[in-house]
Image (cartoon, rainbow, N blue to C red):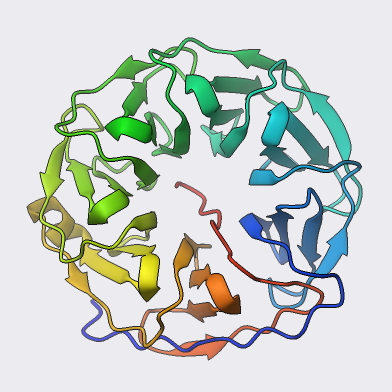
Length: 317
């Protein structure tokens, strides 16, 4: 679909609140909420263009955020979980029954929230009830990301770990993966059979049968890849030194990825698809967005450092 991708660097407006990393972001309609390394949140009611800082009632990094059934829910260091029922304006604490650092949370099957973190931690929350349960997962390595196609969950993490769940995150099975480089991101989309994951040293792995069997894909880079996302036509991965890779869904199945020259050298820590646009963001306040990958516009961020952005939410991960 896309023959050439032109990325436009976005210039962030100077922040009056000091430097803080944005670690994850999600949206519902035109309300976007991003989490920060200082435990606060950024909220935008302007479609993710201009943000204001919202306190969440505590400190410590909030590393991941998801939206489900009228609530924004964020997870972070020390097992911290907070939620907002009024569009990210006010926040209250939830008891996750863990002190492990939580790295990501995802909405799954329109009913569940599933979170992953250090020590192989996997948690599940059903519906709007503020009750989290620890679920069974093999191993004790850090889990860095989790993806859902609406039926199957796949979590990835350190030492090449890949876990798979077929029962809404209640139990997990370890999948065989050659080699052990750390994996940092995983993605799929609704009802898809293909999952793709990326990691350190430019590693790319893929599964074409719902996350059961995995194999390495030839990568055109040795730079660390930190995140990956999929829309209906393309995969996009980002990483160190401004690295951007892309593959069509058909090419991902055959293992062909290509480098996109974005014209940046800053580490890109996050890529996200909101159903309409791709976003890529990272160090040095670099923020880029595109509707279709061919025309890119600047994104201005007010009251936000946008420094060392590490991850952005995408609905299916």
